[in-house]
Each structure stands twice: as C-alpha cells, then as structure tokens.
Image 1: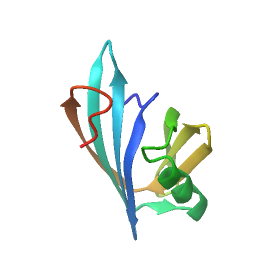
Image 2: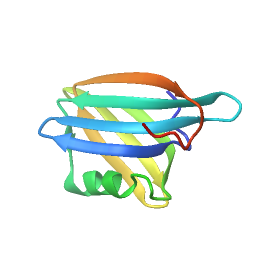
Image 3: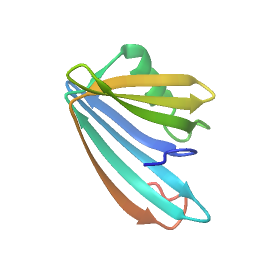
Amino acid sequence: MDLHDAWITAVQFETGRLHMRLIRGDLQRGYASVSTTFTGARVSKESLQLLEKAVKPSKSEVLASELDKAKGGFAFRMLLWPSGEARWVFSRVNFQLKGVSGRSECD
C-alpha cells in the first residue's frame, strides 16, 4: 500500500496494539482513509512520540514506508517529513480502506 504523502490523523498505543488512521492518495487516484491495527506491536518511546507529533494538524507527511520480515514477525518503518523515522515490530496487521472525497476529510 502506497503511503507516500499520507497524513496521520490518529495514533493510539495500548500494550501490544498500535492503531493508526491516515489519509492517503492524490487527485489522480482519489483519496482513502486507512485504519490500521498492528497487534503484537513493540514500539520504542521515541518512535511513538514521533508518530504522535505527526498527527494532524501537524504539517508532517509520510515520505516513505517499508515492511520487512523480522525475527518473530515483521518490522515496519515510516519516514516522516520533516521529523525522522519511526519503527516498530509486530506479529499481525489488519487494515481497512474507505474512500473519502478529499484529503481534508479526516473521519
């Protein structure tokens, strides 16, 4: 899933569970709200703070994201402009896409 230029609209971490909402897309392809839940998640304090600071109305955007296999599960890296890279590991992910009329529609 392409998250380039996505806006983070919500971040919530409870032990072992990272939930994020983002708005992704562009004028040519249209926009979608993405709701993700990473279970079995382990997130460093620094990465969680970086994600929380990137939530709208912040001017941060996702520049790139990468998913890799890691010991015992998977690793996800998200490069945020202008603040840096957030990383976490997890065992499962669930995501839902919902079409929205524009980037400003943050449900």
